[in-house]
Image 1 (tube, one colour):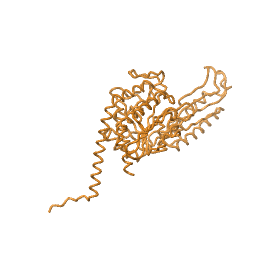
Image 2: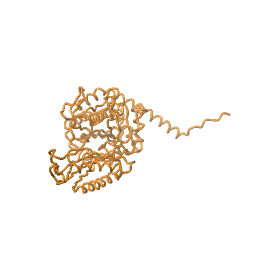
Image 3: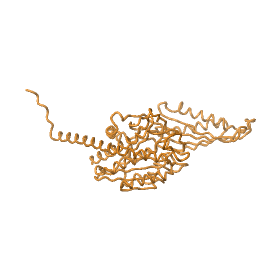
Image 4: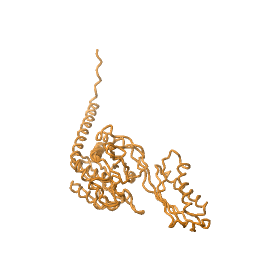
Amino acid sequence: MKPQRPRLRPLAALFLFALAATFVQADDRAAQIAQATAALHDQLVATRRDLHEHPELSNDEVRTARVVAERLHELGFDEVRTNVAKHGVVGLLKGAKPGPVVAWRADMDALPITEANDVPYKSKTPGVMHACGHDAHTTVGLGVAEVLSKMRGEIHGSVKFLFQPAEEGATGRDQAGALLMIKEGALENPKPLAIFGFHTSPELEAGVIGYRAGPAQASADGFNITIRGKMSHAASPHKGIDTIVVAAECVTALQTIKSRRIDTFEPVILTIGTIHGGTKQNIIPDEVKLSGTVRTFSEDARTQIEQLMRETLAGVTSAYGAKYELDYERGTMVVVNDPRLVAATLPSLRRAAGETNVVEVPKRMGAEDFSFYGRVVPGFFMRLGAGNKARGITSEGHTPTFDVDEACLEVGVKTAATALLDFLDQHAAAK
């Protein structure tokens, strides 16, 4: 007698049927999103180029904010708040079905760099350029807003869009960017369960999405050092205290903090970015100023480095009879991608971008103030591949030749829209 195949129990069969139906529905929706995004291709390119031609520095994003707010109003957003954190825009899109809230963040500001690219959409603002891809981030955010505004009937809950100013930071110690957005209620009324965002990455080819669970981007602290000595003629250095020599010793000694005082397995970068001192070649100045940054992935390391800097500066300056002042400013925190959120989102990314186009990426020493949102709600900050080696689009951010392959815009929109809708579905079902 042939062995009988085991029969599924009714409940198990029902569960598997529902699960299969869910996958079919998800695949159908991914195709729907891809089709809607493809229809926006020309519009996405035009928007990105318009923003690229008209870059605005941190806390001066007046035109960009107006473009964003007007578009959200045109799309019928339920709420559009302007002038958040100076020029930020917060939009709320309510779905037709009850459910939680999820947020998407896009930054808008440019950099004080003169563009060197010879392209039709070259910056028209002297000395200002979108050299970090924020024009693409804003464009993707608007594209996601448009796609989802046409799919309200499938949205379980609401999607909150944060178009943020001043990610690159403000002058002085003024609060800016994400911190000020949070302070002014961008994550409240309603509060999202999670927040997502992208950053363009020219080291990844357009079409690729990069991810990393846990610590993903380093913290960034800033410091200013003043070395004080005694002025004298260059012909009689023994009558003064040479702050140039002391500063040079300090630069060298500070580098030994990483190489000799910190665990070699702890990623740390201490960089001196500026040195200013002296007025004439035959005068030994009485003061030299230095500034720089410290980057790490550990709060303990941040505290340790500041203390070691003070000890090092005290030792070097005292040996020469000089004095020092150290102004150490805690800046952007470590970007920590919530591991459970990452794991839950990966299937959405793979379905939207393609199984082989979603890759794990290494930690980055570059900082991002998206980190502050992740201290309020779980966050997932991804990398949006924007490079194209064949076309020579490989320059890193914050350089005058930075650019993006505009194919990344469509990939970004469909991937983000899929991830946001899937997140709302998962959490609406959990309730």
